[in-house]
Amino acid sequence: MHKVKETVLEVVYAVAPITALIIVLQFTVIFMPWDTFIQFLIGALMVAVGLILFLLGVNTGLLPIGELIGSALPQTQKMWIVVLFGAILGFVVTVAEPDVRVLATQIDFVSGGEISKNVLIYSVSAGVALFVGLAMLRIILNMSFTILLFVSYVIVFVLAAFAPPEFVPISFDSGGVTTGPMTVPFILALGVGVASVLKGKSASSDGFGLVALASIGPILAVLVLGVIYG
Image (cartoon, rainbow, N blue to C red):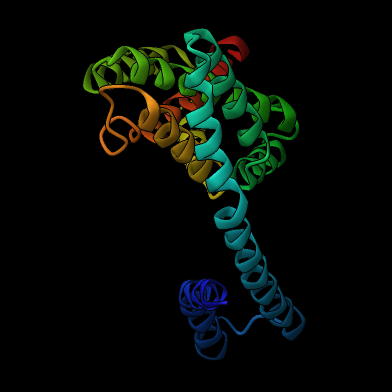
């Protein structure tokens, strides 16, 4: 019960400021139609309720199961299983990420259907999958996190030079939306779980950095998509 109260207060503190600001603007500057304003208030309430339920679900199910899967995979003592299932989990959790779907819908609308919503969602998910697998490999082989980031971003900027200009901002936005409320908890819990059971690994130093790596994957995927479309 205490956890529920804590989650409710956390969501209220997050949603209340933007709601209050819109209400102030409504009566001082924008004066939007009343039906639109009422729709906003109903939407804000639905967002708050949805966030409360979502955060309770994350804390109750996603985080524990992510850590359990992460700690169980290395016990197979087969590196390819850890990497493969890490990539698969990265893919499916990104497909379910609400932020990715919002971005894909907006891009589909703005481009007039030229950049399909489903193509973008699956490309972004494939990019996350590739780099979550790479992140698992980094933990197992103790690869340098700094070098991986440097090399990855060098490839990003090389591809950006060849991709059509309109794909460059889309690619970086794609990297941002994958750090959403569905992907981040699961990937972090997975990395902490893997690092916690491997000898010589620290959950605090080796289990983190996965989100930074995972967010590069969508950038590369969309830039490759741009090169293909271009």
